[in-house]
Image (cartoon, rainbow, N blue to C red; front, side, top):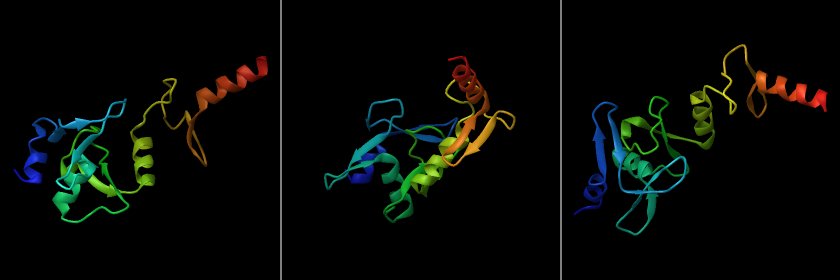
Length: 134
């Protein structure tokens, strides 16, 4: 069995989302990622391996990132991936986030921007109120 055949044997296609779901080795945690061991014994992210096989070239310092319409971290479908930087990844994550940690919506009226990213006006208002009371 070739390396790519071993990889393909660990992928299940979801006909509704058109995702290729990785069912091989997965790390734990709240944001799971698939991992694949090559014939050379190197452990690589499954999405990275899929992207490199589909495009025929290594990613180098870039990462295989999911397009915004595919938030499934176990998807290895090459058409759902793009080569991007860590900054691209942070921007995508911010764009997908619709609410702050306390559940307030990130909309035009409730959002302001700081150099480190967007912030929630309602949370800021609550923090100022707590500070004034103490």
